[in-house]
Image 1 (cartoon, rainbow, N blue to C red):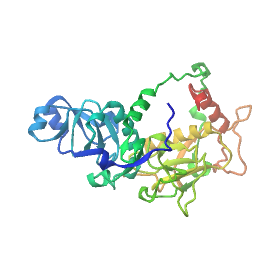
Image 2: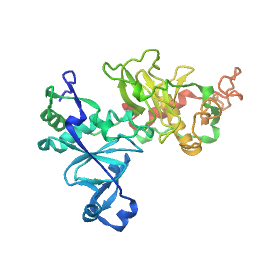
Image 3: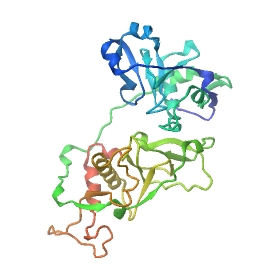
Length: 360
């Protein structure tokens, strides 16, 4: 089923949803009062579930709960992250319940469709901008519609029913593996192998999406870091497709992606651009190494990348050798003070040899 958004109309969330604020619920309470009701707090993992708790205890404590399918939205932490709860749930103080006002449409497919739409506005919320009832219900989303005031819930249901999947296959086999000899790899400063610069630093509240033109990349580990599709912003120059984005701080510090479309960036996001033409495969190799280095050497809200990525951030790479196995030295010393030259082609070949790389 083809998704045609051209006739979709704007709806204010307060016209579609009721919102219920959570309260309480600690892991200690769950341990002391085990049960069958899913306890939800903020968090993107495990649907936000932190355990199962006794229903009667929750009712005694007057916690916020429903026993029918619903959506939950994180208030803090992963603020704005929306999950579908097929069996109902009880929400703690870092989450809220969203229930459709139209009781007849409280169905799995409808909630799944709306959850996807709501996730598109998650980028507006973060540690400094929490989800409040007033703020969230004032959000406007685009939906298929029968008229100006009536969402087309039947279309939503049919669209979800039309979705199907096919097993992903690859022509590459494990026999094509390329062996790594890390002992021959050499250390490079990131800013010596790639042009490293700060991104646009655009706050989410400065963006609009009336006539979107560019991707908006933030500190996120999902969706290639792209959290929105936004309008052109006067005075801001988008970065070209093929550039790499790098999250400098926050929970997703070190998330590094190759962007396939022109883009703006949010606060605390760097952009890495090639000094010589590099293939998508080589960039993916480097992005993987960057993420790995960040996991071991840097820390969110502590030792973040801001003061390091253009100064002393290093990573080891395979280097060029001649046919006799002797190091090839670059007399211009472009990439390192020792004259080592990254073996871009080896990196490309390695990624190409991996299963499913033929799908890139």
